[in-house]
Length: 49
Image (cartoon, rainbow, N blue to C red; front, side):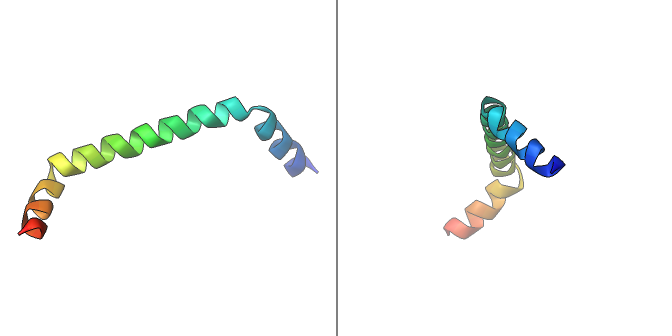
């Protein structure tokens, strides 16, 4: 039963999960950018040839 209450609370606080989603996306984007600028740059250069 406690699990259902936790789920209901999470759904009720949907705006919080939206913020979490945006945060997760920004973390993914920044890590992708870091990869592209670092080791990914060499990998992409080799793959592009």
